[in-house]
Structures are given as structure tokens and as C-alpha cells.
Length: 371
Image (cartoon, rainbow, N blue to C red; front, side, top):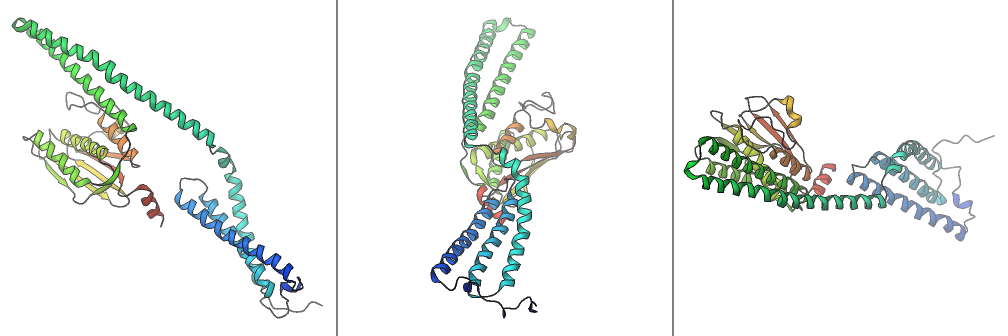
């Protein structure tokens, strides 16, 4: 007849060492490996959790966490094996094994589900080939940029020079119709040169090596507005710039981005009485949200998808001048800094452009967001 032993009892059991006959060689042959296995099991989860926190883009974070819990439980079972060599808490060992079994089920399920994604991960050779392909594409882009810079500008310069010489040779004998045609030729050449320059600037953004630093966004905005006021002293625009705004990025690119946005606001309020422009920070944080708002011409949000595409304009050149490259440039700069941009507007009621930028190094910002 089996004795009536309470569940938590340690009175009627013998330590596991009795099974080893307390032989030192057999005892330590079992104890030392159990301790080393437990130490390894306790180390592995720290690495898995660190990977999960630093690489939240990976689709295996839940698998890492579940596997970490499972592996810690496995380590505890080995610790209990060592403990019960001299003690008799077999009930505690059983509970830990039950927890380990419970943790193993979701781990196995998640591992099975992750199998297709794991098999789709690119190999080092595939990544190397992709990098080589990207390098070739960059070289081709540089060659194209050089071609645009030289091969297109050269005939334009010839057209402009010939048109100027023709105007001089005709002198006073030129008719109004002829003068109008010459003016249109010269204006078209100038417009084409501006478009080529804008395209070159857009292509250079992707190849520009970012020199990131903490930037005073408020000071940059003040400087840009000052230049606009100097260029258009006749304009009276109420500009509000929130003080103390900072961002972490490349000064040249961030300055170009702000110049495009503020210049747009300045341009599209040119026909507005009591023109107002506001530049501020909407949401502070490691990835802050900034905005540039005006009460100018605005636009219909039905055409929002055209905003950030090159040469897509929502206003005719007879209304507001421009190349149609500015907002495409702005978007590319912001995306290179890990942010995004969006807009909100109504016709004749102004527009607001919001964009996000990091306020500290991206790796530090991600770490802080996970703590």
C-alpha cells in the first residue's frame, strides 16, 4: 500500500545523491554538466531578447521571446537536478518541468509558422549580389547625371547664345512679333535649364553621404525667412517660428528641405491678404513631428497623390511659378532621414505640411523607444 504523502512533503523522499551512492566521480559527472548547461540556458535568452529589442523589423520577435522563456525554464530544470542531488524538493522540480512543457508548446507553434519566412531570408551571396546590382545602378545614375549635365546643357547654351546674337543683329529692325518670339525662346531655354538643374539636385540627394548632427531647426527657419524677406521686401507676411526646435540630420539637406517648404508657403500666400505662415513642432519626441502651415492658395486633397511626384503641379505656371520638383525633393530628403511627410489642405484656405524627423541618432532613438 502506497503511503499517504502530502504534495509538498520532503519527509519521505531521499536526495538524488543516494542513486549515485554518493560516489564523488559519478556525482560530479552529473552535477557539473547540469550547471554548465543551466549557465548556457540562462545566457541564450539575454541574446535573444537583445535581438528582439534592437531588430523589431524582424518578423520573429514573438518567437525569440517565447523561446527565451522556454530556454530559461529548461535551465531551471537543470538547476533543480543539481539542487535535488542533496535535497528533496521533487514537487518544485515537477512544477518547473510543467512550466517548461507549457512554454514549449507556443514555441514549437511559432517556430513552425516562422519556417517559411526563415527559408525566404536572403543568403549572404544574395545580399552581395543585391549590393553589386545597387552599385551598378548608382554608377549608371552618375553617368546619366553627367550626360544630363553636359549633353543637354550644351545645346541649350547654344540656343541661348544664338538667340542673343540674333536679337543684337536685328537691333532696331526687329518687329514686336519677332521680339516676342525671341523672348519666348529665351524664356523656354531658361525654364529648361532650371528643370535640368532641379533634376540634377534631385538625383544628388540619393547619392549624398549624410553628415548627421544635432540641428537648430528654429534657427534654420529664421535664416530662410530672413532671406525671403530680403528678396521680397514689398511682401508683408506674418511668420511665426516656434523656438527651440531641434532635429538630428544632415544640415545641407535639412536646410534644402525647409527652404522648399517655406518657399512654397511664401509663394502660395503671395495673393493672400494678411498672409500668415507658421513653422512649429506638433509632436515632440525621438521622432518629432514638425509642420509648415500657411493660409494661402491651398489645394484639393483629391489630387494629393500628385503632390510628391516630379513635375506634377496642382497649380498652373500662369498662377504660380515653379519646376514641380520641390516637393519630390522634400520627400526624398525626409525619407533619407527615416521620416515621412504628408499634407492637409483646402482650396483657398491654406495648406499644412507635416513631416517627421529624428531628434537624436536613430539607433539611440530606437533603443529609448523600447525601454
